[in-house]
Image (cartoon, rainbow, N blue to C red; front, side):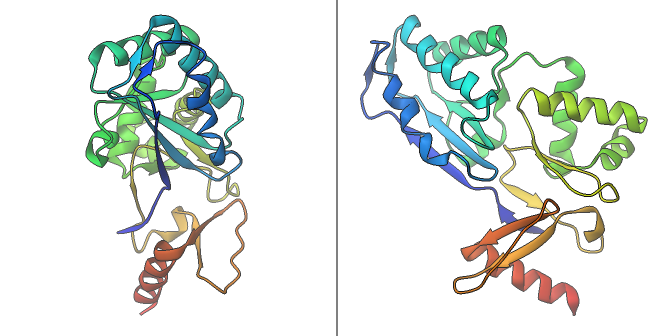
Length: 237
């Protein structure tokens, strides 16, 4: 039962010619409004743009390092291009510099959900991401250990390693519930009725109301909040 969508923003450079490395600085500046916000996904669409090897490097490397450094808060990034050569160069840079980008050929939601991690993930880390997707886009250590038939310590190591490389959201919760690990590519996050104790609490925040969240809660606003209230009411019945 889907209760919310992770926020997404789509960014695209205004000019088609970005062969000058100095021009790409403005592309990164456009993403700064997301700084300091909660978990959200930025989709950087480079389709139809002209790059030189130097300008693409000037865009990708500093940007990825800023993401790892937390400059943009809990923002994850999908880089989109219909040009295979651009995606190939981004992937090479991401692996060389250990940058946490996903790559997609289109900004269509279905393509974004199938976006490939570009960084240097081990086979076990890539397998872990795939299992999280099969679990509805989110998991706890206990849930992943059960699904993959792993010891708790092994599941913890897998999740922590993927999180450290920048490919998961980690939502801190109390020890009894366990931290929640979320795949940023999955638009709709599943919350199964009857298993609420294993998922984060939801605060429905509508206009004119006050909603607070701690480390074990997710705060929803607007249409998502209204939908959550309907689901909560239905569950209580």
